[in-house]
Image (cartoon, rainbow, N blue to C red):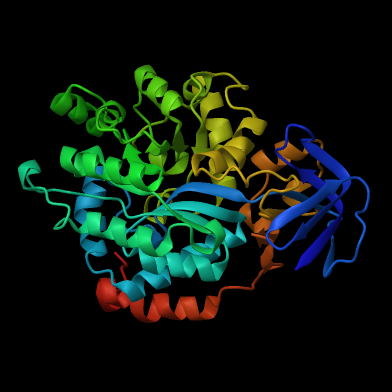
Length: 440
């Protein structure tokens, strides 16, 4: 289907023409076919007037655990380790495919309505998640978050469930539907695995051309324990086993060091900054300005809803732009433009998807429209300032993913929200928490 957007004000994230006004943007099939000031020739299946709205690339959320929407607010007020071991892991042990599908649908609805068009997700029952994402219409890099708690000398990839998961996921989904789904190799974290799994996953990634997704230095204790065990930070010990050879995503990076950043910059490892999650769990603040200065690609993630309570990327966008300015006492520590880059073009780079995150001919048509007639966006002296510091996910009026409008004016076009709610409330929550539904 071909679409022509008229009267476009666009924050393109394209350095060649960063802000366009009174412009035209056209899409055909899944890609952008034209961006410019004169109307392109030809007929279009649909014409959308963008008067009063701002177009920007859809958000790329580079670290999620989508089904954890079922755990929104559960176990709050605890440290990461207590929260995981006493609340999250016991609840997750009760998840089945039907719960995963319901939680994924709920998470996708929240993200799509607030402007997300591409994600990097790490979770179990990954094939179920993949099917939900394909039906919803966004793009995703998926991983299973490999763990191994056995004795290193007993490691056998044929008996390791997450090795088998990695193989099955790759065979069924890697490159699916023209790259709508890509499969990343993954290690949940240094502290939930050991060297044999790291080596196997690194070798598998290199053999299959896959990037890597790992939780890295999220807490001070995680970072310190790695130093005590190996004499190396998580980034460094994983690098010793070839984990970063194809690049990838290091999620959190709160306690990473200049030596870590040198490895990351050299190997093409992006830091997925999760500011809300890290603050809510009391984990700390990632050194984003220093990482950027060291040449590390920094993107944005919301983490799981259980530790953030929301997947509104506008919230993380604003926090990423204000948090570091306050900590550094420097209003230019992270600029509005840098924050927008983290949420779009930097995120695309983190996922190895340089064909999105920018409004330019030939790029994937991942586009959103934001209502700038809303009270919180009026007046507008600077479009980027308003997007970063004033906008909310509720200001998104349209989400086009891969050239297809999947959400418009409050209506989901690829999701059945009532069915999702019914599954969440009628099956998933009672299955996991009993009649009380998780309330505490």
